[in-house]
Length: 181
Ligand code: 5GP
Image 1 (tube, rainbow, N blue to C red):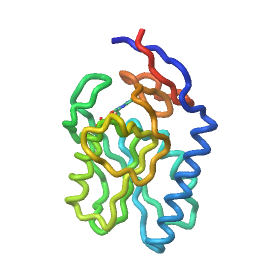
Image 2: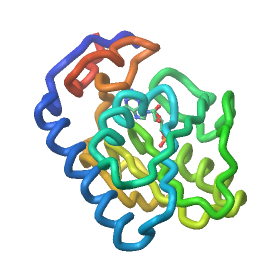
Image 3: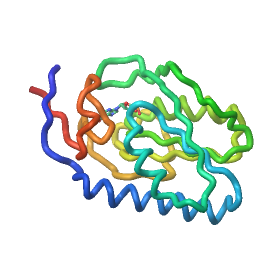
Image 4: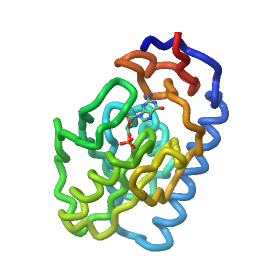
């Protein structure tokens, strides 16, 4: 199926406001529970690249924030996750005894995040949380607790602000619905 860029679901202004709010939530929790410790923000590429860049810059300079990235690819079609995840690039950092927040673009069936959580949990981090810009709760096949969620969205395929269709449209500043043509 082919897609075209459809209606805007969230404007760049709405995204910017929500990302700053999320960052402040993370900051508040981190200061409350982990003052003086290190916070490792793990971006899942490529979808979270733009989100994590905005998110971390609002955390504030008094928190010891580190960045790391994983590149994963999901076996499946362009718009459906199979839940089988291949790690193309693993973390550079050891996460044992670290406070880790996984930063993802979207959680759909939950299969990818559930798999990632199981891999990272085995490495014995001190804490492991999930921050996702978008969440399609109604599509869940496996339960995933999202500690920090930007927006709940309906069962629609969306693009922009890092999210792609076949590699395209990640650069769009707004989040748009991709419509079949
Ligand atoms: P899950 O394993 O939760 O079903 O899928 C997660 C991955 O599927 C996301 O990281 C993303 O790559 C892709 N995905 C799921 N829904 C959408 C969507 O609406 N738009 C885009 N661009 N990707 C999606």
